[in-house]
Image 1 (tube, rainbow, N blue to C red):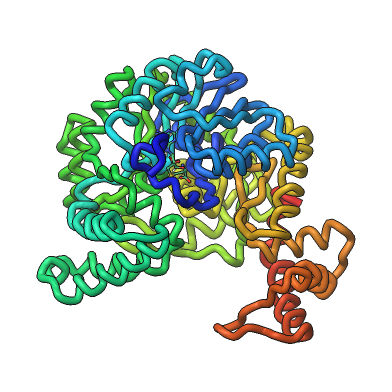
Image 2 (cartoon, rainbow, N blue to C red; image 1 turned 180 degrees about the vertical axis):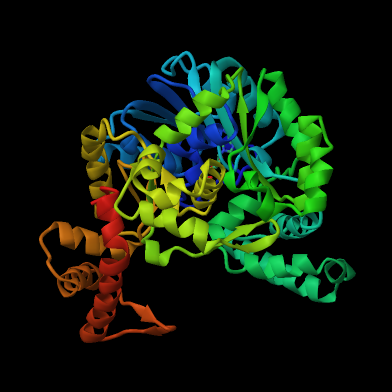
Length: 511
Ligand SMILES: C[S@@+](CC[C@H](N)C(=O)[O-])C[C@H]1O[C@@H](n2cnc3c(N)ncnc32)[C@H](O)[C@@H]1O
């Protein structure tokens, strides 16, 4: 273990993830759903524990009027994050390899932040580091500012905690490179699971172990192998944040606000009887067997009035991130899969087919949507946002400046993807966030931008990149060895890209 890492896994770097809850447009929408006013003006945004910095880099490019700051004490990760910011020439982002414990004292930070976000941090660090985060928030969050914080929680982790301990203990007491120890720990746990009453008594944990084996090993190492691993009860976190004068705003996972897909009628009655909001939230975690929470806390945030809330809803632009034809008419809540009612959702989806529109424009321009009534429209839009189908957008004003910044960022990512497929996200100046675009699809997009007219042209351009690196496609578990086979498969993928994703990427001005 290195001395700077305080027991945090530092031998291998983290995955190149993007988390949509970090997007300011989504945070603004989540604040609205929770009935509070999001900060206004030129915002200062800070991500604590930014990992590879993909989210912050992408968000900075797509939100040039926000100043982004991010830290992660792993210098290898920050080196990569800085290289991407430099390649994209993003001016409004600064990365630091400073530990949380020292960050507030850095004189180059703004006096106060409007948004402080930390995803996947709080459960994986020591009590001292958590203390440092609370101090940072107490000192650096503006009045009216918001904190997004996600963490593992009880009771959902109660049965799985001993399995994590089994993996951790095996890795700690073995020798060799971390990935080999992790592989051996997974096999060991499987063996223990097949012979142990604990796993028989908790069959869900056996299924979870199976699922772990399919996950990225870098992700597993960071998720399961830190010295510190603490699921929290909601009340513990709420009381930590209260020390920094923050109060609970609500869930950033907007589907949590749709009672019908998460709670039975009995559970809804149980929660309705709870008047203490902190206790109610804790009881809700029991009701749904919560494992992971995505919370918003605010420092004196002002509540919306009924009128300002409705205005904010009507003025928010939304856009689809998938073709109407590809939208799944089901959504997953804590109660399992729920069917979306055609009569409600179809008119709303059709209304957004033409591109981004404010809710006001959609209601004024589509009688079928207006006829649904305000409550149903509001609920359906919340569900579609929660299902990652519809996205809250930035205002149309300022889009030209944003396009310049996202074009530079996307060009840098696509150039990097020629060598490595780490970053599978491109930035949209419309939503102010990411779209997931696989490495091959990035090659097709690049070829199309460079004048390639047909999917065959894009496939040939992609093949040139792959062949130069001796890479071949794998189809149904079989490596395609000839040029002809590889180009045929790439062409099929490029046609699908042309039909399904390219129109969306164009509407959202990604390319
Ligand atoms: C589980 S990862 C999450 C990364 C990123 N937020 C994400 O979700 O992709 C936790 C990150 O916190 C960083 N970290 C842990 N303790 C830290 C500390 N005391 N100061 C700064 N960074 C820390 C680690 O290097 C790691 O990249």
